[in-house]
Image (cartoon, rainbow, N blue to C red; front, top):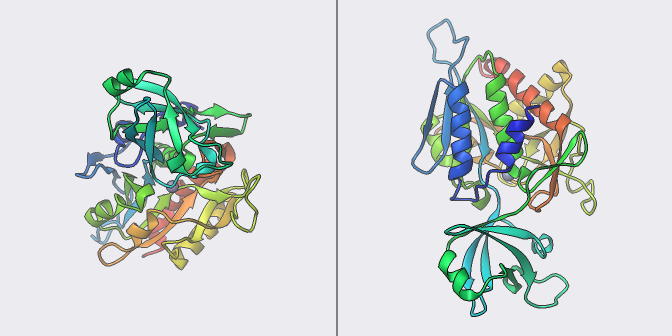
Length: 339
Ligand SMILES: [Zn+2]
């Protein structure tokens, strides 16, 4: 595993609509491993790696998308009160239960550290009942912070042990990592591969539709996390287990995975000894790949992520490696699915 790359993508911020820093990382990396790279008007980064084995009958190679959303859930400054406390707005689905006492960084004129505190002593206060305290007088706060400044969690990547990592944004930095590492390792492909680092997925799949429309894919995979059981999450709700292989989505809230594609992925795992798990997930960029132009075969693949949409998510190195292994073998064989 490329630890340096994992650290770089996980420690680079990018909340929905403000993905510039992480998109710069994606673009720079893809520049080194793709035939061409561009960025569209809404911010999606698209790297193309042409087929090394195009059809001999003159047909164009199939177009296959691998897409990982670059945004992570975060917050935005909404109001500064008379005492210099900051009210904030969630950007993406944030569970209030995980917020109290979290350290945050406000990206204002300069970076300002703060902590989320409850406004009342309720057991689990609503988001509207929380403030950010930056420990500065109101005047100083107002000189460096404005309404609309973005806020991220002050959680960098941590290695819990030799296999398990903790981070604030494995949904979806694990997808980003798998996308970039797969493209770096890809020696041959039977199809034209479009590596897309998308924007604003967490607000309801807002970036992928434009990229998919422009690419007009034959098939595609969203790379995201797979919901994983954990301390307070029962196994019948979040199906995947940490360390037991990549998750292949059969369906989620927005998409029924194409049955031929899902079976094809299962078969590739079986034939190549890649650990995998059947998953029913939350809702991903796969929906926009599937329903563009005249339609494409689509589903989602992703390493299990425990405590998604929390600020302390866990992932397992073996699952990341299984995901990259599956993506590589998929791109080598994808033409067999739609001959
Ligand atoms: Zn996600």
